Amino acid sequence: MTTFRKIALATVGVLAAALAALAWTFSASDLVPDATDYGPLPAAHPPAGMSLSALPTGRIESKAGFAFRGGSMSEERDFAMTAVLVRHPRGDLMFDTGMSAHLDEHLSSVPWLMRKLSVRHLDKPAAAVLKDNGYDPKQLAGIVPTHAHWDHVGGIADLPGIPVWLNAVEQHFIAEGGFPTELARRVQPFPVRSYAFDDKPYLGFPRSLDLWGDGSIVLVPAPGHTPGSILAFVTLPSGARYVLLGDLVWQTDGITRPAERPWLSRSMVDEDADAVRRAITHVAALHRRFPDLVLLPAHDARAMGKLPVFPEQAR
Image (cartoon, rainbow, N blue to C red; front, top):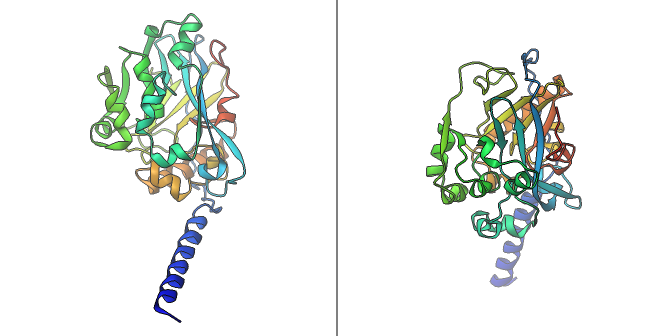
């Protein structure tokens, strides 16, 4: 056997092994839900005027296999780009912003491979949906990003002057986070309303922030996807309870299986994969204990599609 042929065979062997290893990272590998008993659901006293609405701004066509381990690469999934409006007598809040009217410009802050592996469809930006339905965006008490990636903060550019509610950890990530928070820096300046968590546990999370003091909107830190990522627990007057998961998982399957993103996806978007796993197993345990808790991953079009679209409201 010639030296060239030996080198060629060795190269093929290495490539085959690498491809097999990559394929394995997409295979099913379900996590085990946390076995801790987190007690009963905390009391909440949402006011009669409170409501929740979806503000769909677009979608991305991709595959289930990119969203969670064990997902099929032959199964098409729509990844929602949806803001959520929570109206409350003490102040209306928009959670995440979805896609902006400046989408083409903003895509430069998206990883190249992610752009190539998906097809984007822009609908109306959240600000336009509000205005078209007679709601002045200046009524908003704030924008609350679950984290500072492009598809959650891009719409800030369409809502000038609205305070952006951020914890100190995510503010630091915006300032020092490099490429992942390039767009958040680009849409500055914007008014920031800083908030801090109390040392009050909430469903097993060691700290929390009850935004309006009535238990209707409670934020908890869920670092991992970004250092300052949050979850938001929302309780409506009807008793319906929602948890806005941000990008803890991209599809509800990530909690119900439960399963993390495959390595390729994690490597592009997650800052701390171990922390993400811990949060997934925590929320999976909560959902098994409280199956009526409505899971709202920011990019699950099927979950978001069950919400009333503004001006319709869930109460």
